[in-house]
Length: 403
Ligand code: ADP
Ligand code: MG
Image (cartoon, rainbow, N blue to C red):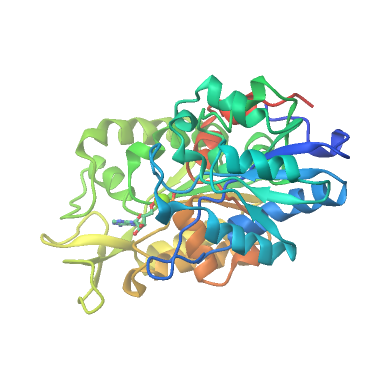
């Protein structure tokens, strides 16, 4: 079988450096949803995931200057996107004070950095308040790097972006991976390059075009590919099925045919949902029907895989040695269309296989179902996980020192 593409992800980690008495610039991914009304942190997942590296650094006598982006302020100072609520939550999780800078590379940050002692931690303000962050401006990167002796990258969710705090600073400082980044790379990288077999990949979610590269790379390595979610209807339509008002990318029909042909050639079992739960609209009181996925009634859309498809998918998952899942099987945010996603999540949880979930919505679904601790690994990455699975080079990983 043709080897899948995978970047070289074997990077030096923070445990290989002497950090005692050093100032560490620690890039985290604290880009997390804030409650629209209270402005508070609603999901602490990414903060909790950052704790092992932070605790290790503080216990080893380093001083930690943590930094992150939040949302898309595009170089403007937007008070509602301040990291202050994150800082409060981080302090609570750590059980230690975390000093919050009022700016990123300005006088307040500079003063707090100069006062910072070994074993103490502070947080810079939202990196994207500065235009230089997304532009990977070398002057901005130099100013950030000037705060510290060592750069530790632990922001797996951001390593697909060539931004100043992800890539630029590595020009100026010794640059190594934190424990979260290392775990993400080794777990996802390991399953792609040397999966236990049979290796089952499950893809769903909204758009085919987002995930074309992943499908191509997974066909190289997987034994079975299960396709659900909105993206399944482009494949069903490519086979001549009637998909009604379902999500369907008509410009991608040829691509879907090619992918199915490639899977056939390589002996990869590619399964589409035989049936669907369909409805005229996405609402809580709508009357949903079960229909063959290739015969969705006019005026209706396929919004979840159907019960037959769910048990066919679950059957394949039960026999898996390893599984990677990205993208929900239906509009799981609405309980009427959540059964397919729940069935797949349960089958994975019960499978005994090595199970990896990536993608913001898929991870949210697993947590909502209360199954998170029954998966081998829930990635903190969305776009980064997809690009890594695609075999793309992640600039925020490439720039780190090799192991
Ligand atoms: P992830 O964040 O896990 O990578 P995506 O962002 O690609 O996943 O897709 C998640 C979205 O896809 C969810 O909001 C879900 O409602 C939507 N979705 C899933 N199935 C369908 C469908 N059949 N029709 C329309 N939207 C769908
Ligand atoms: Mg998403």
